[in-house]
Length: 107
Image 1 (cartoon, rainbow, N blue to C red):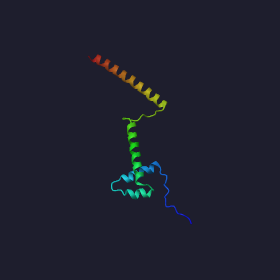
Image 2 (tube, rainbow, N blue to C red):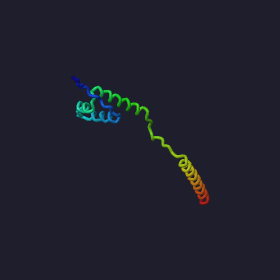
Image 3 (spheres, helix red, strand yellow):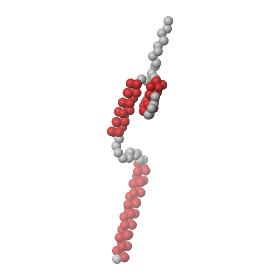
Image 4 (tube, rainbow, N blue to C red):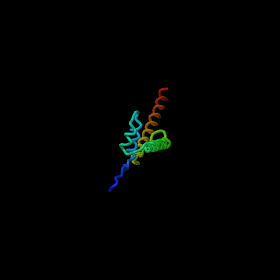
C-alpha cells in the first residue's frame, strides 16, 4: 500500500517574485491568505519577506549619497571638452581685454 504525501513542495522563488508577492500583499484589502497559498507560502514567510524588504530598503537609503551620480566619461571626450573650455576662456579673456581698451579710448 502506497502512502500519499500531502506535503506540498515549495517553489523556489526569485527575488523579483518575492518582491511582487510583497507588493501584492501590501495592497489595501488584498486577500493575503489566497495570495500566499497561490505561491505555497505561509504567513510567517510573508513576515520574513517584509523584514528582508525593510532591511534592504534601509541599507539602500543609508548607502545612497545625495546629488547626481558620477558618470564615466571617455578620456578622449574629456580631453576634447577640456581643450574647448580652455579656448573659450582665452576667447573670453581677449574680448574682456578688447572691451577695456575700447572703454579707455571712449573716455
